[in-house]
Length: 402
Ligand SMILES: C[S@@+](CC[C@H](N)C(=O)[O-])C[C@H]1O[C@@H](n2cnc3c(N)ncnc32)[C@H](O)[C@@H]1O
Ligand code: SF4
Image (tube, rainbow, N blue to C red; front, side, top):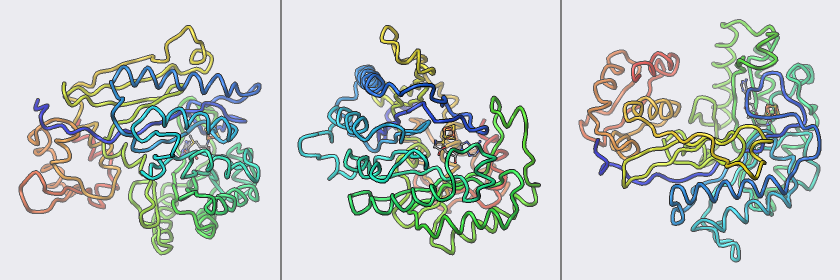
């Protein structure tokens, strides 16, 4: 183990908001249907106590923040005042966090908030932007009424379009970009239906599009009572034609499900995929922190259920796990291989602290199988990239690193 190979990775912060109006039948995220009013103030206090614990545990006072992502659940159920209180307290704890002169804004920290159509009225986005949010991610899923009903969504088509228009409007108040989340491979979806959804999304001019294929997850209502999904052949056609449509509209694919206009990639998610560090605060949130002085990478998992998390007699940390060095090549590749841009062996060394011998033979095997390619120079700066075949058989490729 060569700990001297490490450099300190960028530090992001994920904040989990665990409530939704209804639970969608396909969703396995840690989200709970609201039964009464959200305890906003108590939850913000619990998040800050959780953050303070992490900062002390990992001695993070002097590390600048790279990005913040407020995800869920449905963070847009929170009032703009609660988000402002949360962000000002978070930012005051980090180097860029001078709340008096809003230094963090000059440093261009990306602050994303996930929003559901149907939970946002006209001026709410502007309130979020005034609170410090620079990027909105809107969960549209489909622009077809029948599909939205089948997916158990609380919004209709016109609310989805309205939310995108409100985000466009919020740009004149300082919003830098917005994303639309869409899913495909939906129950009874034809190729034309899926492409129509994409065309409508593109017509709303989002800076970023996340286009996920619907998966049936254990412990969801769809798992107990599976809907009829399109055949594999239709799914491949939807993907091939969808990729082309997105590329023609100027959206560059930089990750399996992520497409963006130039310079509009999600910095927060990029940091995950490049094996950066992140704190995770809130119910069930996960974190990963590297200590370059000891060469130890640790993972945190917070108390999952809102009742337990809000219990002031209980500590928010549920699990603290030290990552075994043997697992690092696989963990690094599992993230990095999602990306379409190449990585260098030097980057692998910097993020895992391991020498290139721990990965080079497997990379060479993957190259023989035409699943990966690399530039010819043999040095730590040589660039490795997944081939189109590797993307098609990503699980097989990943298994090589186990
Ligand atoms: C956890 S959700 C949070 C966003 C927000 N609550 C919403 O639903 O609009 C993030 C995104 O993951 C995607 N997603 C959730 N479950 C999925 C599944 N089973 N298959 C594919 N995508 C899924 C949806 O596109 C969703 O917008
Ligand atoms: S609104 Fe989003 S987070 Fe909530 S249940 Fe539906 S998909 Fe999951």
